[in-house]
Image (cartoon, rainbow, N blue to C red; front, side, top):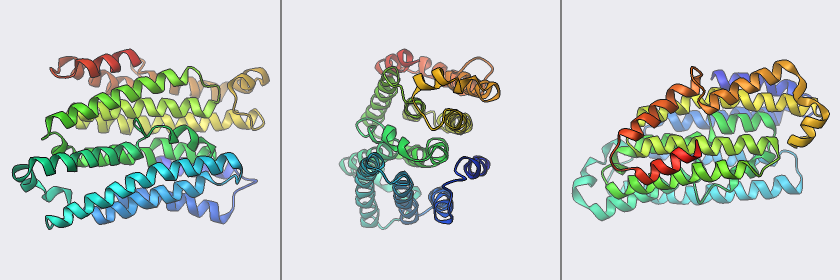
Length: 324
């Protein structure tokens, strides 16, 4: 709520020339969809919140009504619809065992190993589509065609964290199939490393920050795959604050840069010379890096330390260590 309110207040200033009642209500609807997802104990209501998140994000990405936002919206809805379809298959599986809640599936663990493995595989893929893990990571940079306040919500506490939340809820079942958690660990580690490499070749300021989100999502998923659910959730909570703040700073740079998002143009025009915004932005970068005594340090340090003490993750740890 704190992040949503802060972003909404910034949005009224950032988009004062474009802000209409329909757009404001769509942002509120987008936030409300996340509340439906996290407050639901039934998979049916979780799916409703899940689907509404994808639909509202698609509409918000189309806000500027140009060809780039259209192609970006199509890419986003295509990836999300794939996850929605798998979610429906998962719900049908729940109906087949007379259950609508993830908390009532303990009998499956002891009854059918093949059915449990398939369910866990679908669950991981569903989480990957929303949290943009490989091979579904292409839509996240494209989603930056949405207005900056929407990007702040998407990357901090709503759309991309929905997949992390779902896998936290279902990790009890994933952990019961050993190779599934290993698969999840390797994919998330590779995604985190890949996004860090991609960011080095990007000049769009918003896309660079978006790729940093992709990297941090990999860290969260990596932590969950190792069984450190509390640490993954803690890093998700910490990341939401400094990532929302980082996007608001980028929005300030775009205002002072007369709508430009290219990092080279920022530097030439002196948009990053605005001292207050720059100080906040550098502080958020330090948090993102896990600089000592910054907020990101505590969660990342715990995750790295626990990874070093684990016995089954040498390849995943290799990816995780070198992306740092």
